[in-house]
Image 1: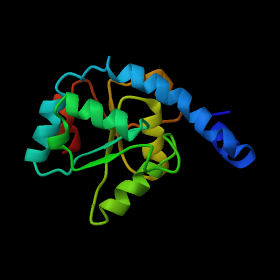
Image 2: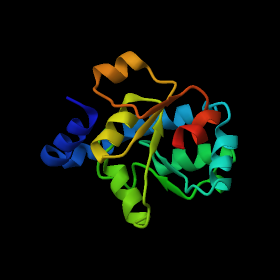
Image 3: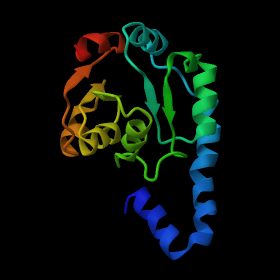
Image 4: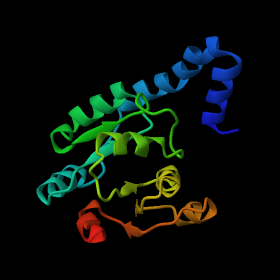
Length: 164
């Protein structure tokens, strides 16, 4: 059973345990956020995307506290238009619910593309009906999970060309 299935089951059958269940990943995230590292060229790429006129967003399964801490630490927040965390979503990736949030906040968006490095990113994009650009993907896992890759990049500096 996937994590979201467990969470749904707890919500339905034992709602009083939900806070205790969520405390487990929160504790892991709090420990991990201090050790987080920035992907090479992430800041430069997000800044360049903004300069090229793209709206930029982060969609993460982490909570708001972790996202805000990491984005501030790496000075990424000024380059982002939207941050979607699990606090705003009903379901986590690979469910596409984060795209619902993006679409609600950007109803005028003509085109949405998901860029990610894991199969859950690709599966969520596919389920949400948007193209997926894979950053340094594990091709075997992507294929095993049925993830369709619109473009593949091995450096974030290649993102503008992949979007062309």
